[in-house]
Length: 309
Image 1 (cartoon, rainbow, N blue to C red):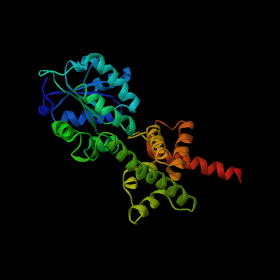
Image 2: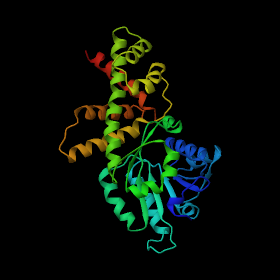
Image 3: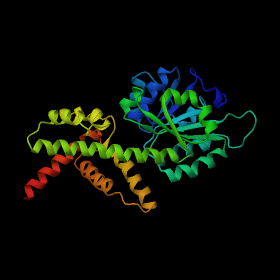
Image 4: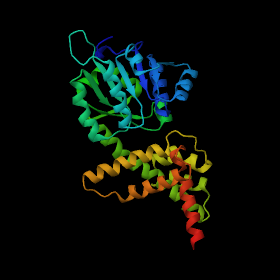
C-alpha cells in the first residue's frame, strides 16, 4: 500500500455504503480510473452493485487488505462509528515507518459534534479523517454537478486530492472536522425549505386554477426561481418520484439541524414545521420516495383541512 500522497488512478478505493449516493460515487471513481471495491451490510445492495459490474468485498477487513483509502457513504454518524469499530479490529494502531496511513473520506451527512471529536482520536491511530459531504442529489453527484464540502486537515486534504477530485470538481474547504457537516446542514436547511415552498406554492396555485406546469414556468421566469424549482419542479408536475434523494434521509438531516440549533439556543420554526411535514409523509408510506414527493403530503393535508370545514 502506498502513502496517501500517491493515491492515483489505477489504485483500489474502498466504498462503504452502496445506496443512491454510494453508487453515484462508484461511477465517478470508475470514470476517473480507480478500481472501486464496494461493501454494504445489505446483501441486496451488494448484489445490485455486482450486477452493474463492480467488485465487492465480503467485509471491511477484506477491503483493508486491498486498499488504504475508504470512502464512506453510510446513512449517518452512527454508521460511520460502526465502520470505524470494524477498522480498529484489523488496522494496526501503532505507528512505524513502513505502516501506511489509512485515509477515511466520509461523504455522509453527520453529527458535527461527534465528527469534531472523532478526527483527533483517529489521527492518533494513524488514520486520516476527511469530511466530504456532497451538496446535491445522487443524479447531480453522478453527473459531476454536486459540490464537495470539505472538513479536515489541509495537508490530509491535499494528499487525498486525486480521489476528492474524482468525486467532485466543485469543492469548498470550510475548516476542520465537524465544519463540513455544519456547512451541509446549513445549506440543506435552505434547500429543503425551498423544495417545500415550491410544493406548497404549486398546490396553492392549483387551488386557484393555475395548472402545475403553468405555475412551474411562472416560478422559473420570475424572481421566485430557485435551484429546487429547476431540479424538482418537473418531478412534482409529472408526479414522478423515483428517488434521487429520499424524504426519510432529509428528515434525518433536519433533525440534526434542530439538535444543533437547540445546542446553540436557536429556534428554527420553519424547519420544525418542515420536519413535521416529513414525519407525516413517512407515516403515509412516502419515506422512500424522492424529496419532491413532499408535495403529496401537502395535498393530503389540504384535503384533510377541507374535510374538517
